[in-house]
Image (cartoon, rainbow, N blue to C red; front, side, top):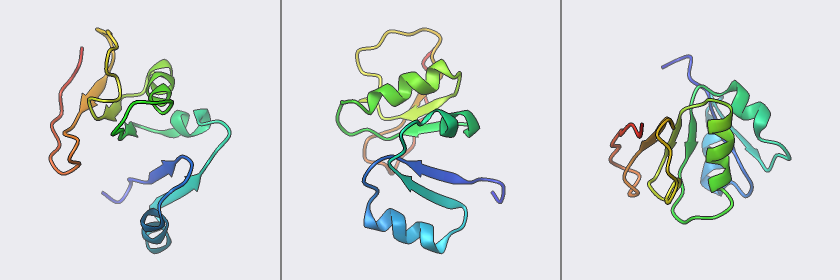
Length: 103
């Protein structure tokens, strides 16, 4: 899809992420940003690939507050009860995507 641009926003991007970004102008790695809201505002969808719970889960709430659909592992919104959230899940092995609408 030629119109798709992927932005990886967050602290401590891996060396592999940076290498891929150097070779692909449609992949942008920002590293740490003080405020993610401008990036969320420009996004069509937010991907939050969590393997363990933590502060990164707040990114899901920020995206939901800005009315953006979210793709995450089931770890992301674990324990939350929302009937209106647009969260799609995928298996945590990161290879097989299983879209599931939670709403």
